[in-house]
Image (cartoon, rainbow, N blue to C red; front, side, top):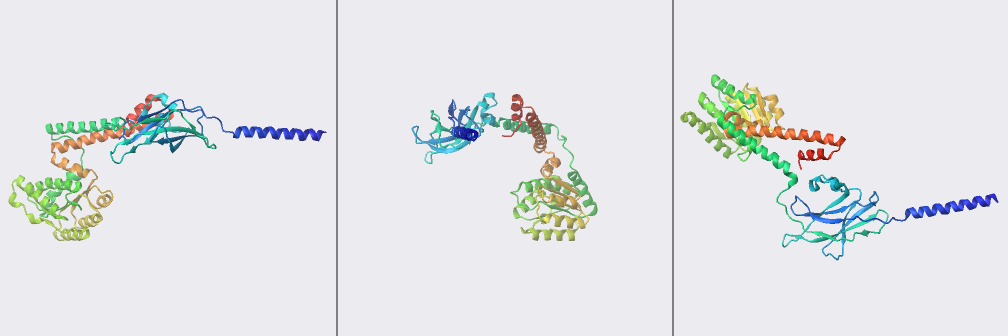
Length: 416
């Protein structure tokens, strides 16, 4: 009898456990979001719209939203994407929706617009929101069908901080140009390589030896070559004043012509046009190592007292610098190529690093526009670095102490 009772209780327990498992496996009726809307995406080029809907009590790891679209309000609708119900909150995109606390109560989805190939205008589409569970094929659709037409916006207000930063940079440049016009001796930081120019030219004059000047590996369409020619203009005036000699081998014919005119004008401005020798500024070859071999030969034969390598250089940099060092010349180099800087640094007496090459013309000529632009850019760099530091500090603080006002201030320093 006891065994019969035990068997009965076992069967009853299995039956109830089965009922419970069936109940658990049955899909739960999902509660649809209360609101479903569509708006034009703000601050964009008119190629997307935003779908917005409130969170649902049914949101969870196993629940997903299904976005469907149609060209007709009555359908048929075709699914285009799915998102998890635990993602894509309005609070995740303050660039679109601001910093309201209510943003945590809304989901959003950015839908790509369809463009008419004939009119090049967006086609009006209709959107339907569905809701489903992971292990269920049933899709609960929202009763509201929404639509919106994308529009191009004139301004991206989420980039207002970038505009303010750029405006301040222009203001700094204008302000320092005006100051430089009143005071040509406006202070800029010392660059040893440029201060050595007078020393190198003076040494060459005392020794009765020439000066060798290279404008780099590129033609006049390169900004580095233009910067080098500007430096050549100032250096040629010193050479003319000291009655020394300057040799300028060129890789390109156009660069040769420009260098001849620049040096000729320098001699003319000093009042010694007859001392200018156009044969000292000549075309060699465009071949990289053919040019390098020719310049090395000039160094060995003429033994210039000073070598200037200013511009963009490639693999020939170490060959030129080492050959010049072997002749005992003072060498001043400058390049914007980070790959060649190490060779110039170890083989030359002075090296202009990176942007110092572009600052050189302002440093030497003291021309107000160049000088003011240089000081203004330095002030802009200080502003940018300060913004990065402040933004990083605020981001770190916000990570540990979330605060709405702190988030707003942090986004002012964020590059969007």
